[in-house]
Length: 306
Ligand SMILES: Nc1ncnc2c1ncn2[C@@H]1O[C@H](COP(=O)(O)OP(=O)(O)OP(=O)(O)O)[C@@H](O)[C@H]1O
Image (cartoon, rainbow, N blue to C red; front, top):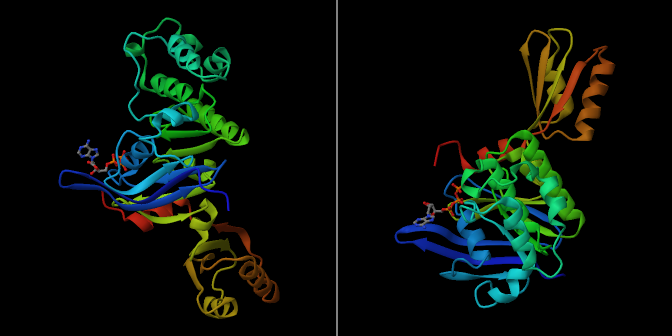
């Protein structure tokens, strides 16, 4: 099997008495988009910053492109793009200048002008960094992370605080990176973003990975999904439930409104419609509702605030 692009094994990180990362293990395959999700303070940023070589593991190890991010930092820097949660630019610098500077440090940079256009940074003109809005800084940070055509990009909350247009532009850019074979590791609090972008999701809580999989695997594993339909009131829900399977529940929530919960698969749907047909029932407005990644996330990490 191809070796992972990022390998984190048993990582332990503490800040004084605070355990930030507690034996975290995950790997990232080449050319994939991986989302790291977790509540505030779960240890995502600490883990990513360790992969970027900003922190030294206190336990376990981290390999990036097969190298040690600290001792092999000089080899890794031209190959890895980094977008930090907090900007990282000189207060007087202008977007075009910053990008041109970062581009000049790389052998085969992207076209700076095209990138400026793409991320809507053109209108900034001579605006210095300190006067840019949060979203503009964010977009500049993203541009700086990718201008050097890296093989691997770390994006820490790339769309936090962005307006819907900029969010979509960022998503498109991540899609393009994947198409170009670039490996992307991102953290996000937007579950729809993870669902939309990620090939692989790792859910982190209390400094450990507590679930991993594709968004579809996570939303369908052991899933209690739901079918809703309307029909004439007073159907024999007990008999219907029996016809479906022992683990399925059927409830008439209001006269004529039915909710079926259980492991919803194609066979169950077929049995349901067959039962309706043989009982002369016209099921209307039938919909299958899959759990969202947000539902799964809240089930895994609980609902209380961190
Ligand atoms: N420099 C630091 N000094 C002390 N404690 C820190 C420091 N950085 C992080 N921590 C603590 O380590 C834990 C993990 O923080 P981290 O920033 O890695 O979490 P996160 O998952 O990225 O959270 P968020 O989603 O809020 O960005 C938290 O309890 C945090 O308070």
